[in-house]
Structure formats: structure tokens, C-alpha cells
Image (cartoon, rainbow, N blue to C red; front, side, top):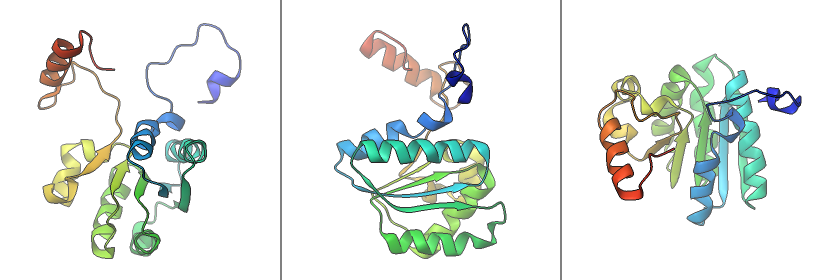
Length: 173
């Protein structure tokens, strides 16, 4: 995201910057009257920037961070992290992650009894591999923020674009 801060001309971006990755999730949470956020994220550039954006939007929306925890690639600590999130009983759980840590957190959260009104990950649950690793029932109700294209070859991807464009006169963005 730093490239946008230097005043360069003719720099174009096609993807959502990491710091804005969870904006739609927090907008939805606010619209639903949810107030407390548990934020956990991997100690890596992309998830750190996702977390920065979550903090900023949480404050701007008048919500409270009840957990704000960075974790390492050593996933042995995931059960303790999930227990901390469960104890916080947040309305929303946001996980800035990649595949392996998203799988580890999902499994640990199930054991710890994490049951937020909304749970969102930065990508992994959108992939079939995630559902295969944690079980389809564990994926139901999760939100995953992903970059989307109408020509992506995933089940119902083109159908969604077609139906949306027929309804609204434009392709989803």
C-alpha cells in the first residue's frame, strides 16, 4: 500500500489494497449493529496490513477491538489463541491469514467454542482446499474476502456475474 503515498504519477492498481481488505466485512458488521471485534493475524506483510486497516475502520465505525493479536508461523500456539478469542466473546472475529494458519485457527476455534455472529478470513475459505481440510460444515457461515473476476473458473462464478448484470445493468465489482 505504501506505493500510493509517494505521489507517483501513472501508478495503477487493480486489486484492493490489503489495508482495505476487510472494509466490506466491517461495513456489514456495523450495519448489523455488531460492536466488538476480535482481530488475529499472522506476522507477515499482507496480514499485518489487513490488521492495520481493521484497526482504522474499527475505530472509525465506533466499534471496539477486544482482541488484537499477532501470531507466528509456529501454529502450536493456535489452541491458546482460539481460547483467548472464545473468552473475549466478540461479535466479529477477523483472521488475517493464509491457508495453513486459517485451517489451524478454524480447527482450534471449533474446539475452543468460538461462536461469533460473524467470522471472516482474508481468503482461505473461498478455496475448495480449505473446505477439504476443515470440513464443509466448518465453512458454512464464514466470510472470505477475495479478489474476484467474472471470468474466474469456479462453480457459479460466471453465473453470479450474469445474474448480477441482468439485475443491475453492470458487472459486480
